[in-house]
Image 1 (cartoon, one colour):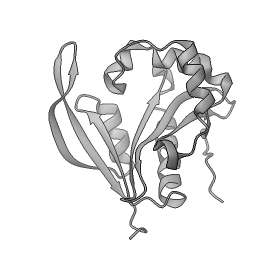
Image 2 (image 1 turned 60 degrees about the vertical axis):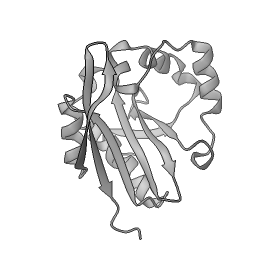
Image 3 (image 1 turned 90 degrees about the vertical axis):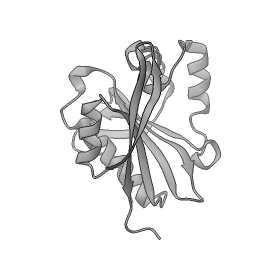
Length: 177
């Protein structure tokens, strides 16, 4: 059996108790550039999202998990998106909400746990990540976990300060044919 628990964090399904965390995170304008968010989310909309968060990845093509510390405090979210079982691939993204919870190995552990789940349980051949060029922390994290830079999408993300480049990373599962 695969364990989604590490030494510092574990991954779990979103629960109704996560509504306030989700509300704060989704409405944090400092991460809208990364998440592609264009407008605030209401608690009503997020409550509906949580009610449907149990749906199967094969149905909704996405899996969002809460990154919890060992005291069950949700410190971030990690996603598989654009799940494509035919081609055995998915995108992967991660956010640790508070700056004081970053650079402590928690994101690396969460990312490692989800990669292992994707390769072992979902039998994926590859994972990919799209990271803005100036996000050096995320670039370091993904490279540390074996993701390889495969390309640059020039002026890919529009921000209020102009267009920004995005780097695409891939990681392959050598055990899948």
